[in-house]
Amino acid sequence: MAQVITNIFTTTGSSGSLLANKPISLQEVSWHDTFNDCWIVIYDRVYDITDFLNEHPGGEDILVEHAGRDATVAFRGSGHSAQAIKALDKYLIGELPQHERIFRKPGGIQLSDLPT
Image 1 (cartoon, rainbow, N blue to C red):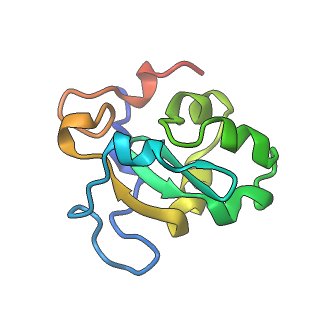
Image 2 (spheres, rainbow, N blue to C red; image 1 turned 90 degrees about the vertical axis):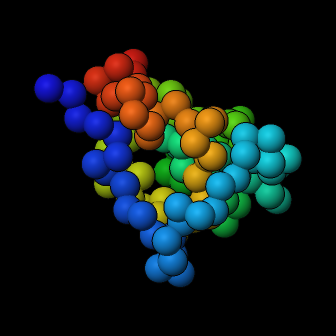
């Protein structure tokens, strides 16, 4: 049986507040696509990774390449673990609105559906 993506996430950001009421559209994410202002979407969650860029073991260029858009397939394709996504919790700023989600919705894509 396939594992549903929601099993690897927390529901709070670094402040400890519930993020369910913080929708951020893909359009808004697209405005944050530079080294100085870098947001990405992974599994329908929005992360401001600007301060993480120079800490990323694979270098900052690969992150900026996916800045301002959904990086889920690239993240998954790089072999990141559930622990890697947990490490991003402190950069979590919101999530996509329900109508823009792909992964975390009823009938959405499951972990086993993604390329490895």
